[in-house]
Length: 368
Image (cartoon, rainbow, N blue to C red; front, top):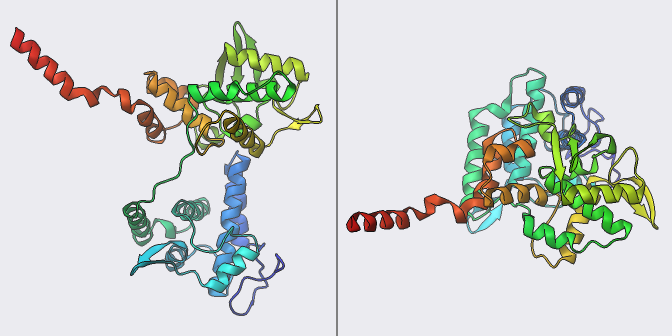
């Protein structure tokens, strides 16, 4: 099927195609883009709004217009949400429309979407309404209750949010040990150390790192972080733009810069037949992390976020205060970081030893 073919079950009175948006949606995208500093967010929002436009036209035979009706948002959710119906799982998206969305490359595969994807796409539509100052169907009690029930139902079925395996200091050391003294090894060693030690940088932040933002200091560098999701989302909570890189991470970065003769622009570069090329993409950063984890014999689902979650987890294991960790990661709220922190400190949490402590206190009282 041609990408420009209309995703309609009936006629196409507007001439709108799968890769086009109605004027109101286009306006919404422009306003969202004006608010967003991250290229990843821009792509994510554009993808979500294109999907909304194509789904709406395919479902109702008319272009999407703003504000979207509450009933349409509810239909979108139940179309894509898997649920238990009798003894089998079901969803409401018409098979033909499902097939057309996949053929138009607006959907990866046939079937329902992950709950997290549905929630994200509803959130994007909600943002578009907020920016246009329109009545927001996504904030209706019906939509909010449906999503809340969907989360509870998914939990009861045993579904849990998937998280990348954390790379803590132990795993990081094993991965760094796989890096040789050639240019590839030096680059990968510097990249791994940088992404972890600067506060668990996202893959897009690592790919976007520049030489100009590195300032030499005694014992290492300060890296000024001027791109990233937490920066675009609002002011830091106790964070600072300058991230210290000291000791082994600083040595690895210095060695890479000297060997590759990188004097400006992207810090981490492609290497083609031994020659230094342009900057790495975020996907390449994730691939390097995965390949080094595999080379180290590590077992798990590793990716770009593994170093970020690993930084928080390692900090918790070492008993580092949460505000100090957040100052490095630039997390804006305790809620978003506490899951990693608890996972890392669970085994050493003193509250888990209250019974042992009470027994010790009791024995001491008896002796007294």
